[in-house]
Structure formats: structure tokens, C-alpha cells
Length: 244
Image (cartoon, rainbow, N blue to C red; front, side, top):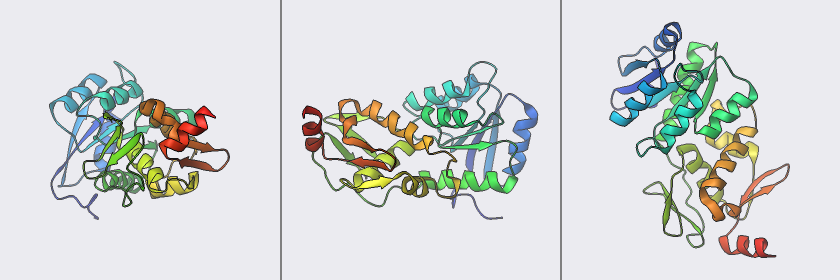
């Protein structure tokens, strides 16, 4: 059996679902000597797991007995230790809006139930692999409102750090790496998600909306090219466009 994400240490995976049968189904799919699976039946248990340590992966259902999975996802992303925790939503509620809201809340992938065991393992591998790599290209411009420290994996607007999810960081640095050029949605999806690409382009739109909100006034550096994709423009150009 192929190793998951070229692991060099046992992986700690938390399976968060109210139903025992659902947790067991996922646990059996991930049965491997190099994976330590832990179970949680509520959002509170999940949040405590993140507070007490850094899991290698959270597999989260949307509907939990004490709070929604979306709310849990948002709380994790807002926590100091939660920005770099990979989160995969696995749910039988898998409409387009469910997927978009999950990505907007900070999920890195969404798998609908029922699923094939090999598919789940492949998607887990893709998420973990993404967290072990960073975009190859550095932004062309270090000046302006938005700056990126690729070595530290950190985004700054002026002198303030901006907390982005891993997927948001990848998306923004991909756009900055091609500053001034229009990047098509399809290209962004293929580069950032690969084989685990979301079915709807709205997943990209949700991430862009979240990034803009977090960047504040610097969010206008990301331009929407209607019907095509997005373009990152230099802050000074964005300023002139806004004032004009």
C-alpha cells in the first residue's frame, strides 16, 4: 500500500463525527501502521484536540451534536494553532452550497459520502502533500501593500501579519507569482487541488472573497476578470484604479 504523503513519522488523524458507524468507516479506510486515528463525537472534543496539540489532519463532518462543523472549522482557523492544521470535510450533505460554505470556512478539501476507500486515501494524501510543499514561484514584487515571506510562509500587509489558511496562502502566492497576468480559474484549480479539484468554480470564488476580506483595503490588489479568472496587480496600480 502506497504511503500517505511520504510520511516520515506516524500521522495523527482525528475523525470528528457524531455517528460511530461513520467514524469506523473512515478509520477502516485509513487503517495503516503509520497512522494513529483518534475519534471525537463533538465539536468541543475537536477544538480541545487542536488546543492540546497539532493534529496532522482533521476529518470533519458538517453536522455535530453541539455545534456545526462549519463553526468548528472557522474557530480552528482563528486559533493560533489552527491556521496550519489540514482540514478535510467528509459529509453526506454535499450540495454545491455545502461545499462552497465549507471551503469558505477554511476547509482544504471536501469528500462526499458515500465514497470509495481508495478515493478517500488519495484525497487525504493530496491534502497532506499540499501542506508539505509551498508554491515554487516567489512573488515578482516585494514592494506595495502586500508582501510575502515564502521562507516563513507568512503574508504581511504593511507591518501587520495576515492570518490565512494554507489554501488561501497558496492561492494568493500563486496570483502574486504571476502578478499582472490573468490567471484562469481552471489553472488555479488544477495547480492548487490537482486530482482532488472541487466540482464547482465557486470554491475558488469563496477563497478569493475570504482573502480579500482578510487583506482589508489591500484586497483590491486582486482583480476579478469576469468570466476568466483573477489577476494580482501592484498596490500602486490598484491605488490609481481605485482613485480613478
